[in-house]
Structure formats: structure tokens, C-alpha cells
Amino acid sequence: MCVGCGPDHPTGLHVTVTAGEGLTVSGSFTVTDDHQGAPGLAHGGILSLAFDEVLGSLIWLIGEPAVTGHLETSYRRPVPVGTTLYIGAAIDRVDGRKIYMSASGRENAVDGPVSVTASAVFVVVPATHFVEHGRAVAPSELSEAAAKVAEVNP
Ligand SMILES: CCCCCCCC(=O)SCCNC(=O)CCNC(=O)[C@H](O)C(C)(C)COP(=O)(O)OP(=O)(O)OC[C@H]1O[C@@H](n2cnc3c(N)ncnc32)[C@H](O)[C@@H]1OP(=O)(O)O
Image (cartoon, helix red, strand yellow):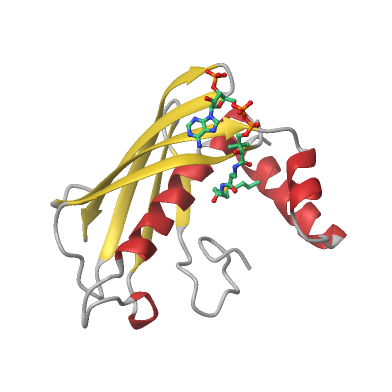
């Protein structure tokens, strides 16, 4: 039920992500009426969510739990409803518990015009972070997350 990537979420972004070369990932999502802000255009906060999701996927490559500490988004072109945004993201450097990342989103093709760019600092946390701070989680939800790690690092 993740609002970013959960396939069963009724109005979520349904972002899909694929691991690339080195510490990179590429993701995509299609803007629907559920993601609208101004008439016919994607809501900026929703676009920010898409970037949080794709950037967050980078942590599966290094196998350390981390959460978004800082996320900065630049909106360079309006993104119409119906657009598929192709987002490429990379880990730029790691400094202690801080993971510096950047990403750019292109309109309707991997080499389309750049609509949005983002940079982020994720902070590595102990696995207990989610248990300590989240609501009680069903064992099935934890096993789904573990399965995702196994998909990336079989
Ligand atoms: C398993 C699937 C995960 C998917 C994740 C999807 C992405 C998300 O949306 S995560 C949800 C949104 N984010 C959150 O809820 C995070 C809420 N914030 C927190 O829990 C804490 O503030 C947290 C963990 C970020 C930092 O707290 P804490 O562990 O006490 O860190 P702290 O010891 O103060 O700082 C560690 C380092 O990180 C840096 N840092 C801390 N917070 C930030 C921040 N917000 N921005 C930048 N750097 C930061 C510190 O400066 C410090 O750096 P240095 O080691 O150089 O001094």
C-alpha cells in the first residue's frame, strides 16, 4: 500500500524502478487525474513524492535502511496529466550516515525534455527506526519488504 510504489494502492503513483549500472536506478510513473493540482497539470507535491520514491529505491542497492532527511525539487517545466515521467537517480556520495543523491525526470521518454530535477540527503537509520516510530506492522508487511531486498540482491 505504499503511496509511491504499491501496486494495490488505488490512487498511488505505482512507480516502477529498475536497478541500473553502479549506484543508479531508473523509474517511471504516469500522471493521472488522481495526481492533478492545477487543472490538467501534475501537483508539485506529487512530483516530489515520485522523486522521494525513486531516490529512496537507491537504498536497496546498498542494503542499509535510510530515510529522507532532506529533499529539494526544482520544477523546470509544467507536467501535464497523461505524461509519463522517466526518472533517473544516482547516489553521488556517502559521508558517514548521510547518502547524497540526485535525480532528473524527463517527459515521455528517457531522452525527453527535463521537467523536474531533485537532490536529497538520506540518513541511514537502524532497522528498529520503523518499529519504534511507525504504527504496529503486520508480519506480512515486513516479509514483503524483505522480499524486495531479495529481488535486488538475490
Ligand atoms: C524501508 C523503505 C524505506 C523507504 C523510504 C522512503 C523515503 C521516505 O519518505 S522516509 C519518510 C520521511 N522521512 C522521515 O520520516 C525522517 C524523519 N527524520 C528522522 O527520523 C531523523 O531526523 C533522522 C533519522 C533523519 C536524523 O536523526 P538522527 O538519527 O538523530 O540523526 P543525527 O544523529 O542528528 O544526524 C546524523 C547525520 O545526518 C545529518 N542529518 C540529520 N538530519 C538531516 C536532515 N534533515 N538533512 C540533512 N542532514 C541531516 C546530521 O547533520 C548528521 O550529520 P553528521 O554525521 O555529518 O554530523
